Image (cartoon, rainbow over all chains, first blue to last red; front, side):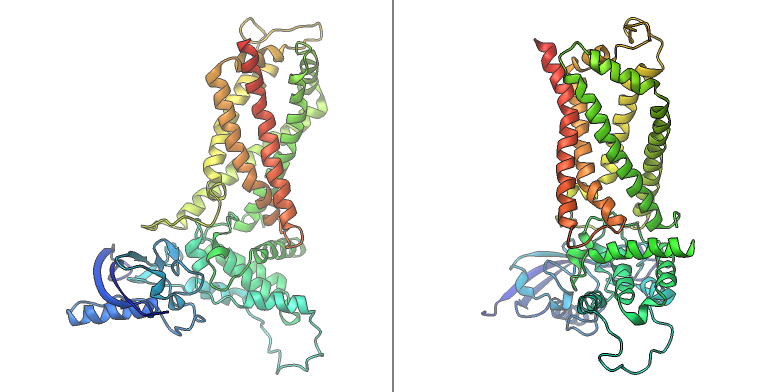
Length: 253
Length: 224
């Protein structure tokens, strides 16, 4: 694919801090390589802003190889932009010369904006702290046949464990619901022998924390799964529902 | 359990599926309207439905189901709206169906429909004092001529049109609601999720179509 350059108009959400009202600011950016990633395009804009003596745009990024889930931004109305995957894996060849690109932070009560495109996702951390772990040391890796795990269970658990907690599910959901995230975590641990021991307490605590954080309820629209960079499926939400109902019936809570 | 967001969705799913079953019973009974006997069979059926003690008990359950579904739905809608105080500036075409994103709006349409429907038929069939222009009594057992009420009501074009429009709303509500209820109850698996969706689709087409055919039938009949 031959490299070419794009001249773009960017409308970016600028917000000084958590209490600032914030507004969109329009920038012109010329000479963007189609081979650069979306985040590299923002780097280019920030260089231009620094040269002009302006405050660069704050955005979350870390690994830039599609596994950390830091790059929380809604691009032209879609979490992580027009392609499946994280923002760092989005390349400028997905856009055309002369395009206007609107960039906003995740929008949810439970993800307050810290600055510009950076949101506070501590609510996810608190959900994990509530029960998304195995609370005893399970020791070193066991011999392969010590703890038999059926292959389909292992595969399903691994698919759920692929969740990187980026929050695109919340950003995409019309209710800003965290169901897919919680479902992935509950599903992953409930399907493996090490996690199964605490499955009832875990699901009850994690759901209670999810509600306390102010996320919406699940309307089963499927928008979350469609935007998930790790392809977490809706069957995990069904399993979360089953796990929750089972735990409620068994513990009376 | 029932106070959490997941528990409240279980209430929505269970009451929803109960109402789904009711619709099937309601439709099958109302098919008697199509019997060309001047309404005798339909009136006898309506008389049984409004006097049988068993039906009375089920009726209380039905109203409870409607009320819980409505109240829980409104409360969830509010919670969901509060979860996103700031909206996005750009709305891209969603990958989710319009019906799935508009269950509140569709539910509201059905609620307004229910108020009209209950006032015009349920009230007249059971509580209104029989008098000319309202409803007449046709035999010594007190059987009311509900058939005539239906016939007269649907002879009015705009009224029939409102009914048909509301049934489109019901169809969309059922299209998402049917399979959504199974997902909420955890009854979803790759093995049979497609089957549930197909049954839901069939149900969402057949049942509202059956109901909508009644105003259309009486309106066309009134033209002759």
